[in-house]
Image (cartoon, rainbow, N blue to C red; front, side):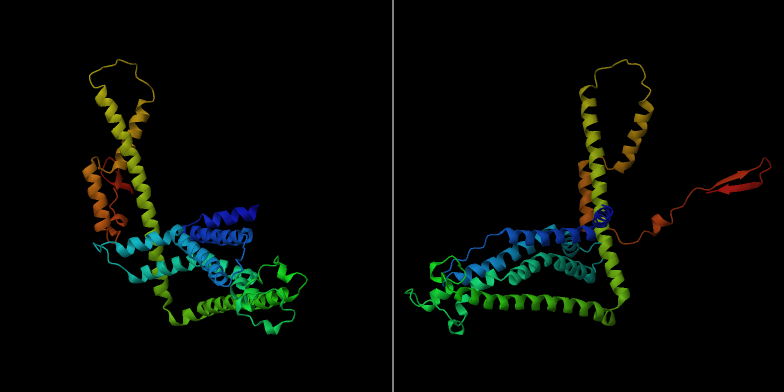
Length: 329
């Protein structure tokens, strides 16, 4: 249970971890979907390969676009790529890094689907049983009145009557399945070797400091967009509250009520002042539209010197003679 909590905390720690978790879930969904999928080969020479390749290719395409859709890096990358320059220059390395991260996560579920289908072998048998030379095996059904191509197309259909009491179908299926599994394991080995070599060789050719800068600013874009959205939500909530309260006050402006002073009125006024602070002086629709327009077309430059070195009041305590006792910042 503690390990499960640690895993959940990891996936909730940042957007990158959340994206990793979603991609892993998509990969597990692809495996579960394949195992629950009842694959039935048409066993017709003109349709076997078309149907099999469709089952092998179409679901990975769907999983790929789902991975692109649910990946937060996609939105951050497109926002950074399409935004006007304004006061902030664009960094192509950041866009490239975000695209690479998005692509790697989106390809996980499709590759899992393809590898599972190849290691299982049923789809490969349906697609390529027609291409097998029947002379390699004994027990070919010759008394069926069918030509060789139609007989080989029926190999994936183990219930077919022409293969009753015959080991020919099983032999051909084992033969094609061996090729399918060999291709699957070869692809898996290739991906692992490429990943390992990339991890080992990349530091030898890339500037690690530049990579750290690129990763930092890509994370910054994600965090900045989140904070902006959260601030907009708070502003919209307070703006809506003010608008509703103002509407009711306008409806009752002619009526005067004489009520005892409630004890909580001071707290309400304090919370009202807090809401005023959160509005940041934006009290009209035109002002808000102008602010959002400025945020998109002219994002602020990456310089917080003014906020970091904001002057703070200094209080100096003196004795009756004017001598400084101590100062408090």
